[in-house]
Length: 147
Image (cartoon, rainbow, N blue to C red; front, top):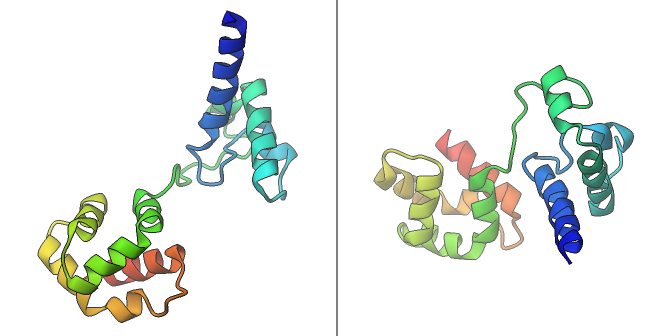
């Protein structure tokens, strides 16, 4: 039983390590071997390959196997928050206040939250230009307004 738990833990750790990287594979042999492959199956295979070979640290240290110095690591928390809360965030932006827009301001490290909320409220139609807008578009529209 202990061997089974250790095996499950090892596999989980191998898979979870990849999610630190924006492309879900991260540097290592899996990235190099599966370059150009798209889809969750290939990401899982690449992550597993990185995990069993244990070469991510070597890749970062030596600057090889797909490591890019200065590359953005991890999901942008604002993007993830917007994607998870699109409808509630739209309601709060339309009102000009609310817990979802307050949380977004905290995530984006906004100093003047009242001005942030007011700007979002006044530009609601450019942030949410249609009912079919995607989370990526909403995020880009908010960042365009705020930057």
